[in-house]
Image 1 (cartoon, rainbow, N blue to C red):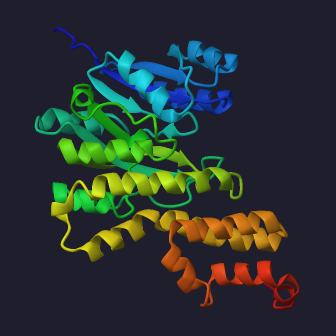
Image 2: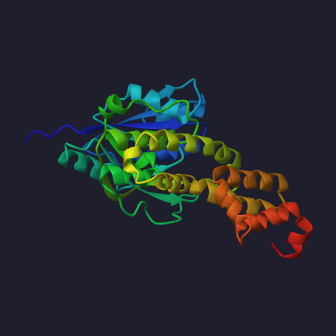
Length: 320
């Protein structure tokens, strides 16, 4: 009996000067290969690190140097080079989990009307220890409900997404002008222009950075998150019942950034990092001004941080 050819999946891995984590990511991809699946791994490196090139070679991946910085540029280089039937992704600091890929392809095979499938991800600490359950818990299938959820704070994880290669011809490449949230923008274009499916499988270990190590990057991302939200929310006016609903969705989309800086302001204050505390306080007000004003007069972490920064001697007596 003739043995069927393995399905070819192009896996795009943007890399930036983290060769040890890159090796871990590539090993997690290769671990899922089998007689039914063959991976064309494309390591798209915009750091020009020789260690990254060696890691790619050791895993049998294709190494693609990318001269322009940014994950969007790296992913686009991979999309241009991909030859697989399907496209998948993995950031160089994350790992695939054993349940990934095959459920996606099975759903795409059974549903020719679908062009992409999203799965669950598991947030982990830097040592890949899970910090919560697989997320999201559910997935609204209808286009309008899905768009509302995505514009209200649901950020699909790019490593848990698999698409047919033809999708790129429909929605285009990643926006290289977006330094942050270009993957959220790409997922929103998926939701707006093609049919999406969902598999309730834990697909990716999504490594979170240590607290306090990326305040500046997080602050920069606020403007890109707002830009992406407005770009898509205003183009899909028909899904909203009122301007108030758009405002609430915007609040949900920026809430994660607000909560981060609200808590970070208090942590920096406790650590005696006055400069970092002021920066985090600014980040909270920049993310959600109305919420920051409201929380500044209530018993919240943001108010406690503000009291310390304005009156450190008084705050220390109150055992902040």
